[in-house]
Amino acid sequence: MTEDKHIIRTSDRGTFRRCRQLWNFTSKMRMNLEYVPGIEPLNFGIAYHEAMEVYYDPILWDEDTNGALRIPAAEASFMASMNSWKKNQKASNSWNDQTAERWDELVKMGLGMMRHYWSWAKEADKHYRPVKTEIEFEVPIPVPDGMILPRGFQSIEGHLYYMAKPVVYQGRIDVIVQDLRTDRLWIMDHKTAAQFGESLAHLDLDPQCGSYAWAASKMLGLDIAGVIYSEHRKKVPKQPEVLKSGALSKNKAQSTTAEIYKQAVLDAGLYLPDYEDFIEVLRNEGQQYFRRTHVNRNGAELDSVEANILYEAIDMLNEPYIYPSPSMWNCRGCAFATPCLADQDGSGAAWSLFDSGKYAPRATQVEGDQG
Image (tube, rainbow, N blue to C red; front, side, top):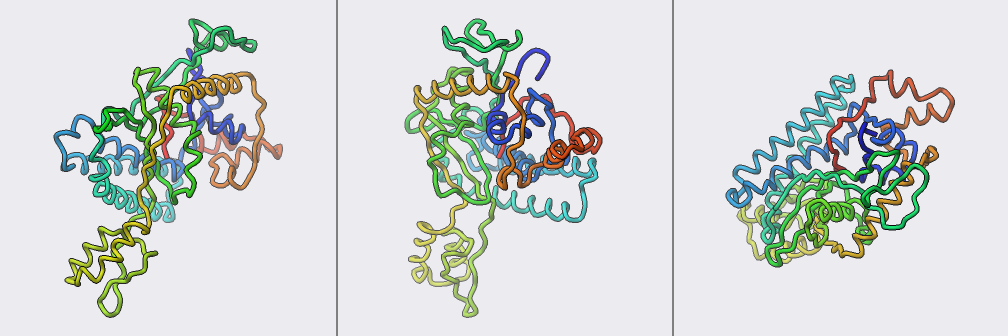
């Protein structure tokens, strides 16, 4: 909680549902702590997002059509963020041979992913142009007329207040793009993941991007058609396998792409027609490294998003009970596992949180929910 307002973030909503103990440690409304050495997936995701922000810079987009300026600047931004993470790890005495090796692997993977993406995106982006990038928003939460609120809450000029302070919804949108075929505006949200999920049904109810579309309409007055989920797989395609005969392997499980495979055939001076059928198999059935999914958001859905944000904000602020929700999924890789256990076994979480040097108050700027 800040001095003048109560801040709700998308990450708050997700963490509150997942584990109230973790929410209590990390939320701006509660202890507002972060794990100082950094969490590998989060820090990598932040660095990757910062590179995407530079690449989709609207100012350079129309002039720098081939990416001669944007691409090196994006890669430099990625490296600056990764170096900042390294610096923080060293400052917290978390840097060692193992973390150094892993850092090198992540840098190599990140640059490889981006260089593959620059090539892939030339075709994928041909009907889109960025309008705004990394839009920080802060939106007051509306209260319907006549709604009876719990003790301590008020509706002032139609917006939610708690203990005489406004309650706002805060976050950051990756990029808003315009579809040049229809002139409609879309939120494009970049996500990095080890694997792509088989089912996409959950995207229709995804609270993060639904709330971003709602916030863009409220704060910027934009008519947002929906969300483009831009997924980036944490894997870099390789050159095709070469058989002892000098021919290229036609194993479709190998980590390559149709474009890379075709170029390898040409570079090796092999007879292209012998490989065209397999290249088509790779194009249609090969491994995916990037995937975009369009999810429309209509007015009724945004009304539901607004109502859910209001209800969850009230739940969070209305003196909720705090308890852990242990499970293999929730606890695996949790940066707050040690203080959580200390709080439960009676030894107390205070030392782990405040004397270990591993936890500190979060930065005060608007925070996004990077992935």
